[in-house]
Image 1 (tube, rainbow, N blue to C red):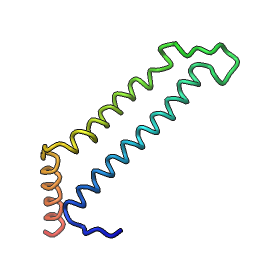
Image 2 (cartoon, rainbow, N blue to C red):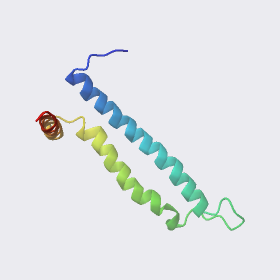
Image 3 (spheres, helix red, strand yellow):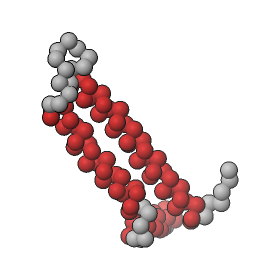
Length: 102
């Protein structure tokens, strides 16, 4: 589909890319942390399986903070009426255009 390259389209495209980035982050978080937990719990070797030891979940816990902050940014800050980020981006774009055009 061809859409006109107007400001509304570019803003919608930016929100879509941010949402896709969050979904990719979530998928990687699930896959990697599942693998870490299973390896830490000795599922793949002959030792006793221990799924309930707290150290198995350290990476998932701390990475979860990053995932939650990413989700909050995507779901709330990009969709809010706060124009701080938009104004900053517009100002930087104008600055870069002026710098390139001298």
